[in-house]
Length: 106
Image 1 (cartoon, rainbow, N blue to C red):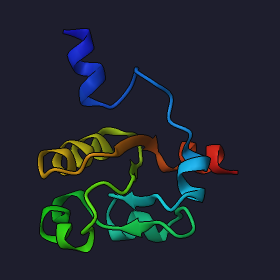
Image 2 (cartoon, rainbow, N blue to C red; image 1 turned 135 degrees about the horizontal axis):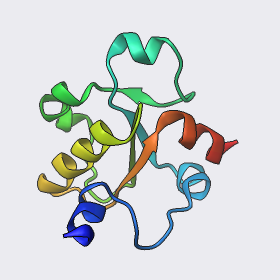
Image 3 (tube, rainbow, N blue to C red; image 1 turned 120 degrees about the vertical axis):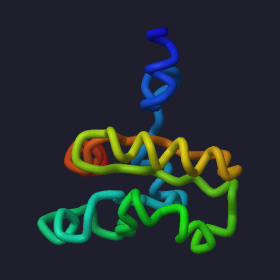
């Protein structure tokens, strides 16, 4: 059961090298609300709230291009990761909190 929970939230397994991924063109999707995003975000990230992600999938045509999801705590970004993977995206990573990801990218 614990392994299922870890997979759901995208934790465990091999560590993702987020700086390397971003340097190689990975897309960062911040799935918080617009007002949360306006309060602070990672430069260059795209704000697509998790509840509107499904209707915006056509913005990401290359299903093999790395996508990094983030939010406030990791819950919504985990949902976004699962949604993307269920639609055939093959290289999706849940980075959890945008602040944590920002620190890793600095």
